[in-house]
Length: 369
Image 1 (cartoon, one colour):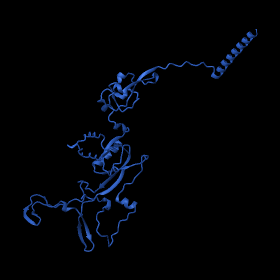
Image 2: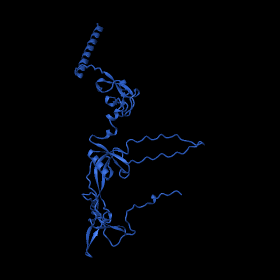
Image 3: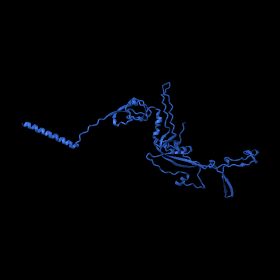
Image 4: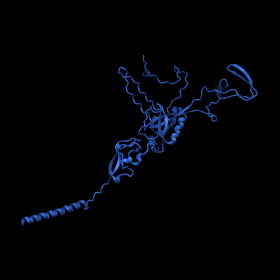
């Protein structure tokens, strides 16, 4: 009897414990029954097993399949390797890239018509690439690289022109002999003869007949006709025309493939024959800039007009613009307080007409004896 009662009490305690556990779990879990996990449907997608370059044909060895949730697959992704094999890569791609219809082409000839060159991808919309000739001086000692930002400085020479002839002043003068008068013909001090003029004739002109100006000498009270001693000098001016211009390329875009090194040669005794040193690469003579269409037209005009164009390298963190003033001889004198030397009754000797850089000791290269 006592054993039966103990079993009944144990059963009651067990039932009460289960009820308490159920009530506690409902209180902590909000009483919501767990939702069944939805079944994830996987689908095969085609990815690159190896990196490929633009224009390379996609062989089956470069492709692999990967299981991916179907709901997260874009509609343009390839799901069959046999469909992708044999197509052409439209641009450079790395391993693990999901292949879509826009990434491949059927014909290599479509590369030029559909995508153009790789360089055009670096040009922002609304901009163009324009080349300009350079030298070691104008290209910051050939220190430019793709992505650098530069300012373009132009230097021009201005001269005075005859507005009608558009020729350099001063003009040349000439004399006209009216009809019926005799004209003396000679060369230097030799008299060759005299002819009668039937029509109006020009008997002078040329470099020796430059148009001058009349000046009154205050001492003799005589009028003199002054002729220029040399051709008109150009008046120089420099100004920044473009700022914050991006360099697309220094030098030519497509370089020729380097020649394959020849196998070393030996003479009859087995000694290696000395080979000629490899030719030194020519320095770049052109740079391509990314500019607006209007700036491209401006550069084109300046180049054909014979202007000197110089590039100034900017800081990599500087993208702003700064106003500049055009520099002329008068600007130099006024801004930097350069005085015009007075005409003194004494001077330096020896006479100096042209400024020359000093020659340093290390500039001399000793010749081989």
